[in-house]
Image 1 (cartoon, protein in one colour):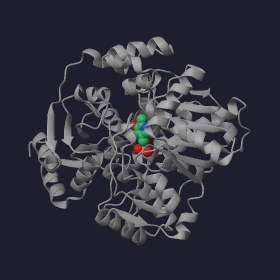
Image 2 (cartoon, rainbow, N blue to C red):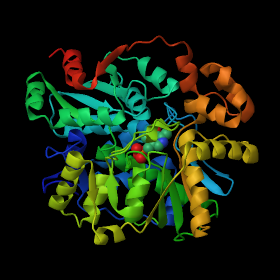
Image 3 (cartoon, protein in one colour):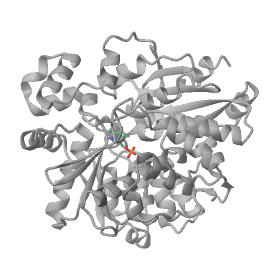
Image 4 (cartoon, rainbow, N blue to C red):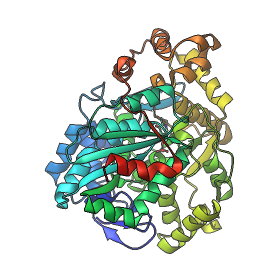
Length: 492
Ligand SMILES: *Cc1c(COP(=O)(O)O)cnc(C)c1O
């Protein structure tokens, strides 16, 4: 199976798409056709996570051998996860919470970033790459740490992470700046996530810079969710969740389910859409936004307009005005017309706005968008804690609040899976403040201990590890200095 850029008709293999991250024309790689699942839903219900991962990923990464892919999967989904199930699912207040946060950095990014280094180094061998691979990453908080953890000390790679200096949670920041590994480099940017992402994309598209890098023995690749090596591992857990619901007797094989996804860059929900196109019986894809509700407005009006105030919320990993992966959906609903898509993306970068046609909008029917305000999000955390003694993180709480709105709006009571994207321990202050104002004066680590006491959930290793770890990364830069930082780290 081949991959095609969303902005031209260049075709590459899966391993080439993983290596490059972004196409030279600025487009994203998409499968020429989304492959169909070739195991039955009953068969999936009998498989463990690693088996489902193989059966799903083999369809997308067709130039990996069975042995290569199984080695990648075994290396990724092991005791780095604090539960043998890898992704447990719990029923709370009428929804199934798929806990995607049991990996080494306690956010769902681990699901893809624990396997990406394996996929990437395998792809490099396959394509006889001699250069060192430089992973260039912009993060709204969670990708950065998960990518650092995945790539630290991986031979033949270096990783550079840019994060918005004042736009991540204290725990997220501490996780990143304490990262070990001589091949790691972490920089706080004086700007927001979109500035970081735009700066990184610019470097990717800079041909002169690419040439300089090659002369120095390097080439860029991306660990952002624009890389299809990130997207395909995310299709897996929707298939796995469905199988588990069948196994538990909550769904009859073939019966539709809904999914709710707290959305930022549109990667996670796009993976759910790919699962649907692959034949998984998903009915509605419920796209949950925080107060940066560009996507909600888009689903209502068909106009994508990023010209608005950027809001810093308590769910920072969703504080995004340019959802990169939406381009893959736009391309599809434009009838896989690269020129038409490229025109819309050019309007986005020039004017910050584009409008899709009625015909394209019709194809968005499986999607439902809504959003939760800061107050609604905090209210939902408190409500869930009081009802179920279950503590939601702020991102999952946005999804949960939107799910409540969805049920009110539509009266749809179908079995619903909520992608639970982070451990509450990653956003302890916001979570504890939502439960009770009295916690305000405690330090972050005192709050973690208190959260443990009220929830009965042990403090994760990821938090214990950073209590005492020394700060190793103190670099900061202005938006227009990002390239200079890269060059200085690579001694160019
Ligand atoms: C990245 C992230 C999201 C958003 O996921 P996208 O794939 O970017 O839409 C939501 N919640 C958490 C905790 C995240 O880390």
